[in-house]
Figure 1 (cartoon, protein in one colour):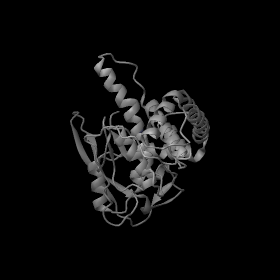
Figure 2 (figure 1 turned 180 degrees about the horizontal axis):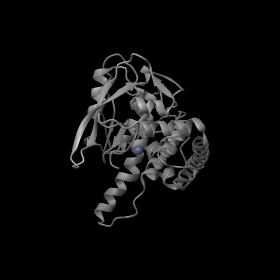
Figure 3 (figure 1 turned 30 degrees about the horizontal axis):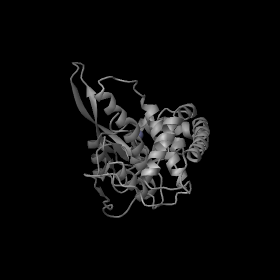
Figure 4 (figure 1 turned 30 degrees about the vertical axis):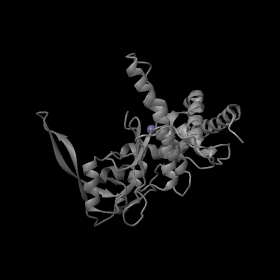
Amino acid sequence: MEITSVALQAQVKQHLGDLAAAVDATARDAAFTEGLRNMARFWRYSVLNQAYIRIQRKDATRVAGRLAWEAIGRKVKPGEESMFVLAPSRYSSGSARFVSVAVYDIKQTRGRKFQELDLLLTGRTRHTRTMERAAKALGIEVAYVPFGEPATGRSLGGRIEIQPGLPSMERTATLAHELAHELLHQTEDRRQERMKRPGRRHTHSEMETEADATAYVVMSVLGLPSKAPSYIPWQGGSGLTVLRAMTRVQRTVKMILEAGGVSDANGTMRRPLLVSTPNVQAQDRPRQGSGKPPSMGEATQLPTRATG
Ligand SMILES: [Zn+2]
């Protein structure tokens, strides 16, 4: 069965309706709102400090000072040795300097259950290939390279970078999300630059909602799960933002699925139509070492878009 625009449109509409309801339900959920507050409280460590923490304690996941832990109902266990991070501090003269601050990993504390947002998909799927094929057909390069940002992927305009070592389910969802940024936001930025006419800029939460709603529908059509119901409210979106994105998401989903060679609504494959792809290279670098999943620290500070 070919995808007809009408059938796909109806399907996308249905999926987006479900997503909008799920986003609003998540936003009302007490555990979710507590998780959000916790994430805001735990400051984002710089790349340098993340490396520094890992040297001091390999299995560190959530790190904060004694007072931050106490504020959320946990206490540092007696006898635990602190780690140190560098934090900016100001003299009265106004010049900045760095001071060393004592921090503890969650495993060195005990008390109230720590509510976290779980935004990383686990599990395996063969559909990473489908998304790689879509990128190739659309002339977008995919590279699996580490980059120093707390995100699983980033869209650079003609090139997508994905952190190596993600579970294939997360890799597939991240590819779909970044493809949406490429098709929706990078293309628009370039067009506006060319026309030297700045159009209406989308807000961060609108762009993230559009990208993740697209990824949600692509994953749903392929029969795969998605974290969009938590990701979208985390990025400031709502059910209404999802519904407002309907037309743009419909168009983008169709482009991605067609480029990926998905021929019907159940995700059956056919050979894709290859558009010319001169400088496309997809390197899938296997994870070094033990195959341990990324730490919760990385997982919960997840995706932001490189291009703002
Ligand atoms: Zn994004």
